[in-house]
Length: 329
Image 1 (cartoon, rainbow, N blue to C red):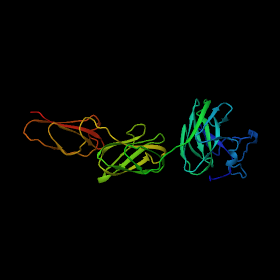
Image 2: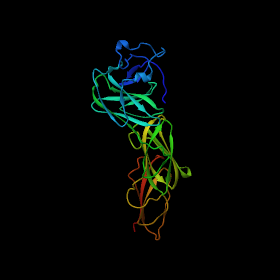
Image 3: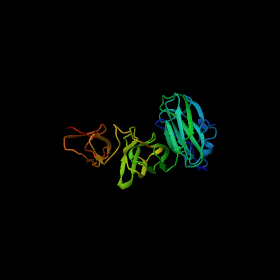
Image 4: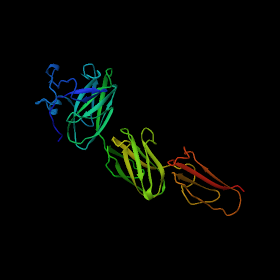
């Protein structure tokens, strides 16, 4: 079961989110008036337990919606004048829960554990529950002028803990600070695009593979999401999914898809090139060599085109090549 402790139920609001802290105005417990609220500090004995503190609060239930409204009669945030409401919710160990706000209210939702320690606060909170027990959800206006109706939506997020990913089969998973290693098997050589996306943290993706192959990326997919597009030989690769600063918590999606080739022709990073032949290649910083085969002396023209290169002197650049050899006789 969840941990238990005894101390005064105290809240101070910071930035519009009610945050448990032992240094501000004391909010009366349910059923108490302001004059009846205890004035002792955390060191005082015989204080109400957390279980007692949530008695009388409305109960949130996962996968159900709870409607409410922040008004001038709602509990007062003594820090910035905003108003808030509290709810109790029972959560189970290892659940990944998502609690979000809908409606006219401009506000945030905060989740506290049974020690009244803040776990997270945002318009959408996602958190992995470490211990079963009773928790507290606080809905707060963004500022002193934020009033209105709202709906609290809570649900269990269905994620996978799989340590493998397959081409064309994205996975949704959870990152809790530490990096995760995921295996990718490539059966056919080709151009592939790998993406790691998250609304909760700055995604960072690394890949290592056969013959010392290694790449990494931070923000190439935009919106702090990671993308690696490259030519991959058959073999086993290790993907490392992490946050840019190794402190991210939240949901992320990892996908591996074949990358569409520009132009016509097959993808080849070596081999022979004959007159009237064309091919697509992929440049990743290492030089590519092709053998030109001609049967008759004469004038020949070799063309190389690309619409994807940005910096020809960067050793990290990805360049999609279109090569054409034709006779000019």
